[in-house]
Image (cartoon, rainbow, N blue to C red; front, side):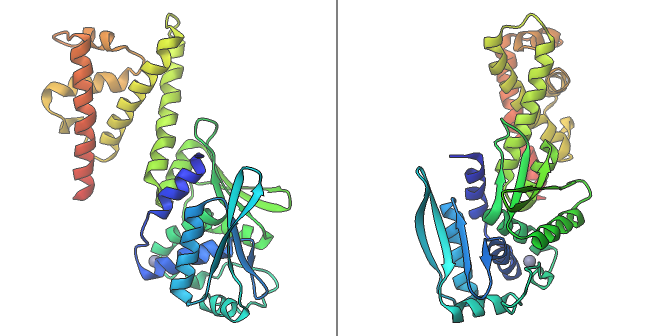
Length: 310
Ligand SMILES: [Zn+2]
């Protein structure tokens, strides 16, 4: 399973917050499908979950009869096609979203984004329909592949309005228009905004892992075989500590006997467990350090969760 389809599955488990958001998400899905006009409403996707969700939302909201079938696009890649096959039903869907079906160019109708809450839902729909996100082990990149030029411009404007920091770019690929976001922080932020915190976390963990690996690499006398194991454990620990800082609780929320070790680990990702133990006052064995780091990880998680709940 690709990172993209995992992300889409995660998004499809999310319940829309309010009725206005369900409408906005459905609009995003249909608008960014290949066809959304009087003659044809149709969307092709490799994500079964996304296809099911589009069909379900469209039928629920507009009462139109929506058909869904599987086609073999490429030998090993079955895709789902969701379509509205009756013209009367198509008009009903288009009118529901404030379109006449006669528009010469397809544009984003902002009336369907009633409130700020709907922005996230709309972009989620667009991503489910035409988005991909690269596996963070390869690169940090999220993109929307959009069939129409004006729609591409509208998407660009929306993302720019959403946040100054996303810095979306555009390119063209095989007759389609691509709007992309690059960089670990930006991709991670957008994934969180779309409603995929797990995918977002994977991106940040991979970034952390790279950083730790680089720092360890700079220390020459380190066996490569141990490198990944050490680096991924340290990255996990540092990620948990970073979250503790980010959520506002800070290291002070940890029991006193763990604080020094937490600080030491956070500041020295390249140190082995044995080296960490030697730096403590009084010194601690390797297994003692290991045990405490595990407790720190568990506690950090718990503390952040209760902070969010408040
Ligand atoms: Zn809403």
